[in-house]
Length: 488
Image (cartoon, rainbow, N blue to C red; front, side, top):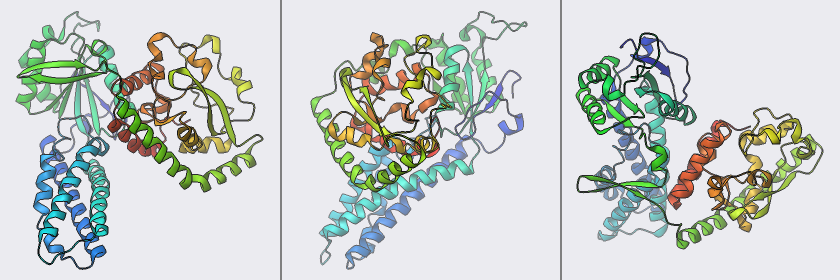
């Protein structure tokens, strides 16, 4: 490893500033073998999922010969390949199963339809609606579960990908911060600052373009024995980027680039092409009424079903709260809803009954730098309250808020009125949508996020809203609750 490269262990999605031993950095087989193993595991997961679906269909129908359905198996696998389900992981720092939910749904729907049409077209073969539905839903559920299991198995079998961060300053710091907050990337980071050029440790004043030639970059990338380069430099230009791309191609490693114009680009942008020319297109329009109607419909159906299913559990929780501490089981408070309109917010009480009167004991409102506060060890939280917060069970009564239309299942987190009054104009964007039980904050770090980091993920959600984004956040919420990171 080149002398100036400092490895930083991130393990299974955790970053720290502690250096790791060089032999750990260099251990294990490198990129192409690991990527090929992941593709094979995903292929086997899909194969097992389809076989399971055919087996369930045969059991439900009872008369259908499973051999006919198995003849369509190659078509299932070819369609999965066309959908990119085996290649999407390769270029990305990390790729979750929830990220490919739309592709999985499309693949299973087309493949199942093809199989059903094929069987119905055969002479003397029948297929009931129950058997067809059993095959479809089994294939859909199996695809999600088995592909997630395949990725977990892959992470357990291979060494973390070695990634070299080339850069310094705020942009490079943001890489380490985001990878610390976001689990599942399976990386070990190494750091190289091209600006630390003088003998006394002070910056030399050179840009990356001036300090690293193409030969230097090729030597650095090859010598560090990395699988991926993450370029995070504030002075990136076309010539420098071309040299980095060339060096990565020569060494056969992956490349991820953080755009130095992040603030200028914002979050509501899409990249398209006119011939070979890249075009950045900004989303400057409001969410369509049809999308909002579908979002509201999904809220009503899912919240109603959720209330019915969790009602026995909520009765038990309410009893435990009353036994543990004095005061009502439900906590009611005015919060800011859509457009800042106040509504009565419901949740299970997790603090002592006089918590609001004791707020001055834990936070000095006049001295708050940002309009938010979250205490890791709040003395006002009860014993049952700590458990409810870690498991997010205290949020269940908000299903009533969703059903009434005060809140949505997914959206920015509702804040207290006195905090919203401290917002400036650039922060009021988060009031454009109904607040949510879960949202981008809950799946991107929860209580570990700073106020600016929270605003950033919520701005991306609001400015790029889609129903697909809601479904993805709902799927990721289960994992966030299980890990309980930042839940306090």
